Amino acid sequence: MYANYDNSVSGKQILLLNEKERYMSLDPVVMFFIAGFTISLMRVDFKLPSAIYEFLSIMLLITIGLKGGIELSKQNVTNLIGDVGLVLLMGVLIPLLAYPILYFVGRFKRVDAASIAAHYGSVSVGTYAVGVAFLETHHVSYESHMPLYLVVLEIPAIVVGIILAQGISKETNWGEMAQESFLAKSIVLLFVGLFIGWAAGERIHTTLDPFFFAPFKGILALFLLEMGIVAASQVGLLKKYGLFLVAFGIIFPVIAAAVGLEFAYMMGLSLGGALLLMILAASASYIAVPAAVRIALPEANPGLSLTASLGITFPFNVIVGVPLYFKMAQMYLGG
Amino acid sequence: METTTKVMMTIITEQNLEKVIIHDLEDLGIEGYTIIEAKGKGGSGVKSGAWMNDTNIQIELILDNALATKIYNFISDTKKYDNYSMMVYLSEVKVLKRHNR
Image 1 (tube, rainbow over the protein chains, first blue to last red):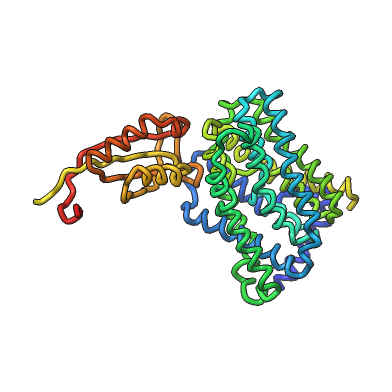
Image 2 (tube, rainbow over the protein chains, first blue to last red):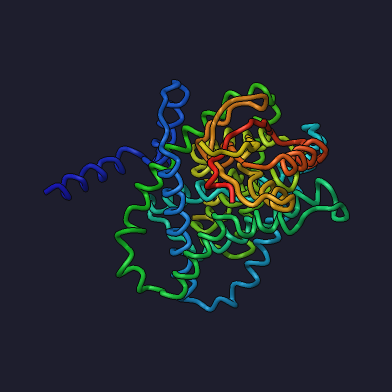
């Protein structure tokens, strides 16, 4: 009975909204983000306990890793080597694109421009997860091995950022840097998911489905509630850092998404895969890179890059960017 | 009450620096330490403790005078921590004899 009722409602909705509006309408998980953002701006003293937040991000990372791993188990991994190379190239290209804009136009100090460039060259798993939820909501399929690229893209931007800041010759402690970035919790957890997914393959669905895959959107919703709160706490700093940073945090992701779209085209990705690659290109890191850069480039102002990536770009991508990039992909690839 | 007088050094700094500073302190000869996650406000703004890049740590060391001086001099002289928020203070503590091998 209830199922019928549900069907009729969604049927009505589809009738009411034309195709375009349907893609622009907000995903419920995004509403959780906006709710968190609003709660925080109203100075309501609420946040998830940090252990819960940690748990939610662990769940997201492992689930995303598992999804990718299961897909990898079905195909010949060596076929992907060329594509992985292209994605690496994209990861090097994006910070190189961001740096001159920040240094020459934004007139940031060299080390700050390099640090922000590193943040934007790397990726945000939260934004990626919103993209996955968007595709699932709209029943658009995508290449499930995309999480592999998520892992691949975490690294090169940090290296490029450090080289931009101080050149190769200086006494960079690459050992400590590698420890911070290659063995960052997020990368390790994604790898764990990818490896177990790859090793166990489809068997995972029969045993782990109810725990990992079924609650994916609920976990993401709670995660985004907390992220909304954290992102809003950065808003106060926007005034301090000026208009250029705000403009950069909104315009650069769109440029980077266009770069991602071109790479998606070269790799022959489907519409859904293209959207996810664009999101990877457009998103900026706010966990792994800040920690690595804080150690590798202590002179860089951590507030600057974090405000840009977390206070501006993350909300922009989650609310406006994902549907916008989808539109761009549709127009370019035809879908 | 049998106690020995020792120096307690308290270092409050960014969580990101934990591995680096513990490595340095061990090189200087400490045998143990206690780390407490902390939040607060100071010269470099609010640390809300909400998530990793926004959390402080408070490191507590119980030291004899010689080692306390050595660490104090290292922290004063090194340029390594210049760009990190850090607060260091010393206090005299009485440690139970049984803890003083």
